[in-house]
Image (cartoon, rainbow, N blue to C red; front, top):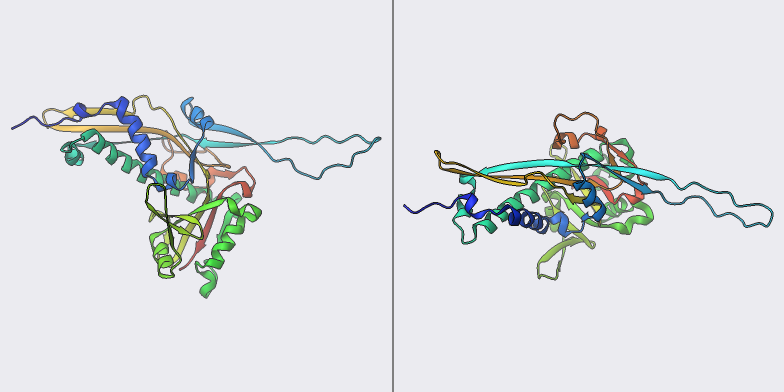
Length: 319
């Protein structure tokens, strides 16, 4: 019997870690749609230590201009700031030979394993973002970005071009900042039945589904009430979610149980995935990092920016 490939034979952490990070962003529909954006300042904060990232923001200047006079001096006004705060997520997972056996048999096992891990993190980060949005919109301060027609009767409660426009204009004259829409697959199916979907080709030749110019993201992790047929749809603007990679002490490790003949791959991530303008309130959490259930708790979130600046709208409807 020939020697079996070991995880430690093919995984070079210095090459594997950046590969997984890059491939995760490439494979994520959230990144490709432009919803999630990196930021150099956020990158620095994520790697600087600490679990809470403080991001002060200058507020817009308000009020009317003053009439110039040669006898009455101008009155000075204050320039104010608001404090956005993000949470550092500290997550990890481990896989054994059984999960990776097929990848180990490939012609380039490190690439194959890296793609498996990148796919996993792309899906998991999408779940984390949905949990975050559930919590953000459970906060009373986010009512100005919520359009809920689910209690209406008949067609008035359904996803239509008209009701979508009403949701879009929750941001008033900032409506054009919204560029993508995340829907449950059943909503996407209904949009197809109504022939509402158009496809455009990106620079790589890949077809992208759009609705009224909005990039469509389909995710069954978006919550819906099956009993009452109520769905949630999210409208996003470019860069609505800030993202940064932190630096775990040991991002990737391999191990082997020689007696059992099992190989192990352990992968850890520190990252920020934060809706800009909605402050994280630490409060009480069970562990070192919030769970998805804790992220979905509205008591952990408070709006600190003007509603128009927060490029996310929650649209609740039927189909």
